[in-house]
Length: 497
Ligand SMILES: [Zn+2]
Image 1 (cartoon, protein in one colour):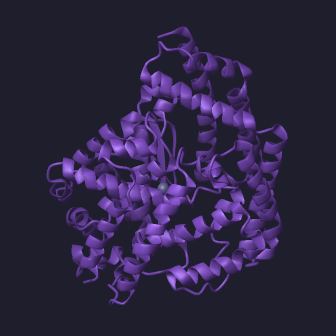
Image 2: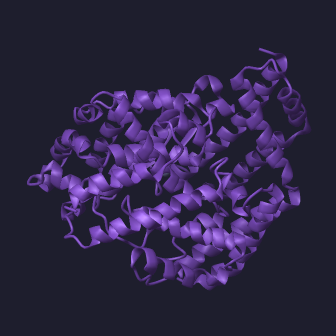
Image 3: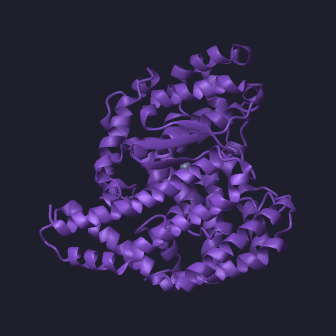
């Protein structure tokens, strides 16, 4: 290996060391840190973020990357790593220190204002801060540059090389096909799910969750599960990937879906090549692809009848008093109730995408300057009526429900839907390539699926971008048809349509 490339690897690993150290502190903050630890923890995190940023923008790195980008002796994988690192380096260089400081200050003020506004159901507390933040985001688009649409610059931070135009096509499909289908479901009688909300002992739920993670192939020697108020996955290398879950004793859904969802994220991280630590070839492709892994396990596997034909009896052994007269089919029906609702995070797997569609339309209009922050509450409520046929009773349950905008995360929401759509397309291909996949799931054997994901997705790191990966695996670009076919097949049966 040439010595410049070796220096590059060593340099990138140093940056990763600092970032992952911050990751450990973050994980600790969300799980075990005593309440008085907050102040110094914030300082420690900000110091580490500063060090990582300094390393990532040093001239020394730029010189090395530029030299390597002209080196024709590199392998294809090495070239791809250099191209990705150089792109990041150049992006980082576009931000002036003054801009970064102003953005970070505005974000922390906006976040605080959002918390207050949500608690008091008062959008006016949030509006002046959000206005400032939106101005900065519009400025950021100009700083970063774009060829077609300013929003492209923001999407690129979460879903590299995906354009506003592609999202417009996808969400037009959601609007034209899925909205109509959900209307048909809404006219049908609803399935029962009252037994999901009986008392489910915490410790037994925990044990069942661990059983499921083991069945999925999550490696407990390279990870652990803890409790946190918002479930998440974090990693400090592919050999230390941690998940958290949340348990509600009066709603078995929360633990089951967070466990499988985070487990899916974690399997992706555990499957990235450890030998590529700190390099793009050892990283996930995009948030959309990350989410495709969590959603594939959560929805395509976890919300299937085959999966519960195997697991329902196990759950029943833990909770015979609650589930005695319930069949796996009843349980399957209950977990797949489709019903328009107010809150994105608790939406079913179909109407979920209307929540994302609304946020996408709003973000795009905001960045284009077609609407302003003061228009948000009424704009939001009109869209909820239009797509979900729901009246929003308060801004707390409406435009104030998500944290994302207060963090300045514009362009993030679409990745949630991309995740489900990629998942449907990948899963459809897996069914073609894995012999008797459904029967294997029904036997509790999830290994063939995990191996397929490892081989086709995980092991490549960031070598391909999302579109290239999708074409390589399925022979075509992301196509909404696969999600719609999955939805129609599953829910026509569930609702007798
Ligand atoms: Zn997720």
